[in-house]
Length: 188
Image 1: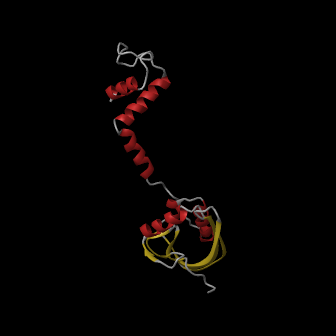
Image 2: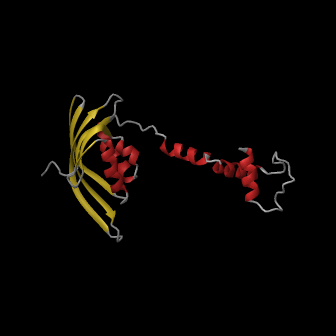
Image 3: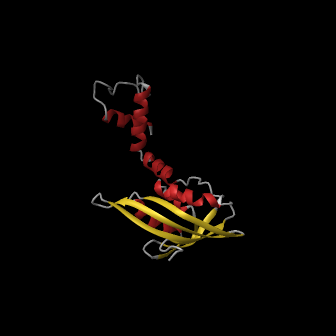
């Protein structure tokens, strides 16, 4: 490792900054110089990419939404903030989901796929007329929504619709969607 750091340092600096006659212990380097060399060596050794991949794929803790009255606020906030992991966390692993186009999907992976496409449009959504009926750990909820986004020509588009959802309180105390039909509203 030290050898690759030393070689990377020599490859990236002029002869007047560092000569082969300087000690292998990196004598005379400043702290900033050593950190640059360490970074270059780490990347050269391939460790940097592995660490970066692990950091980006490491699961983060997402607090469950335990107050059903806050669920729509959290869903709206996560969609508007393009928080894909946080948004998908609001669904159970085996959720039944109907997207706004009426396409039936099962499972979190399919919900994630659908939301990835939607989030690429950088949408802003407002959920209104929110209602829920609770029976023990199950809730039937309805809402109307208005979403704006820019199309590929930069023109602002607006969509409106509604949703009918079934939520279930989970073991961690959080409410999650077990059925989400975003293709219709309760008023239709």
